[in-house]
Image (cartoon, rainbow, N blue to C red; front, top):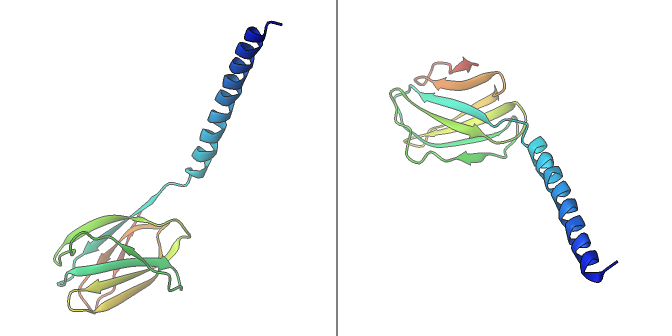
Length: 129
């Protein structure tokens, strides 16, 4: 076989094998993305602004801050945030203007799509999917 032809044949074979490997890597990444990102709605129907929000796996102290951008005003304002990957049961920590901290333990983010915060002394209302 001519050396030039052998080099060309080898190059074509390498390209063909490379094309076979690329879809395999894409398929692996697609499998990893099968779990959809969970979105969670928080409605602030209290009289106080929320200045900080954090979420953690239930009964753990590994809170991750949720970026608010600006305080979530009291009255009837809402926001949607992405729930970090993990299990269904989560603890939600809310810090209100003035420093009051309220913990909402064991919220099932798989069964509810949000939480409505109502004035202090009342129970929060989970939102159904």
